[in-house]
Image 1: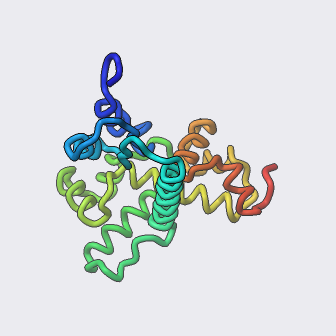
Image 2: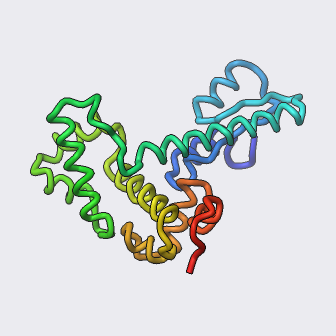
Image 3: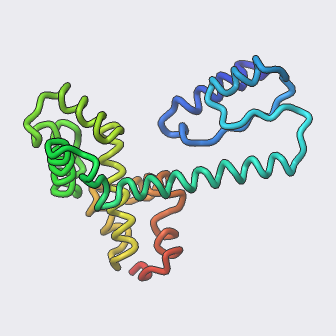
Length: 205
């Protein structure tokens, strides 16, 4: 019930924008009824609270949502760890595909031009067949997976080396340290410096 749009449309815009899609959205509204609630969830809302509501309920809901996001980030970190995607559940052919994809990424991780076409050429496959197999085995978009690998390796370097944030940024293919820090914070919920400090790792030089 805003002047130029409504909460449903605003929520859809938030969820359909790559920069904001992961932001949780809670509706607090006087629009009661199952139709309003259903429409809210269809627009992408994480929670739909109808007025009147009490503050303890709202605070508990926010805490639960944030906790769930923390768990997802941890699962994401584990998914993209250097030893991720064990071959135990894959056929030999599929295991070899995943191994070669990871090998190509590892060999080119510092190259900011690493993209899907480089992987396709490395695998000597047609574009359509590569995308189909990649999606079936890994379940993510190609560049989403590459970005995840970059972030996971960066996190590992922050934890286990004394390299500066700038040095790590270049090592994982980011020529712009500020953009690297922004991307890292978006993925892990904290800046690289804060991540390292929280791990009690070696201080930045």
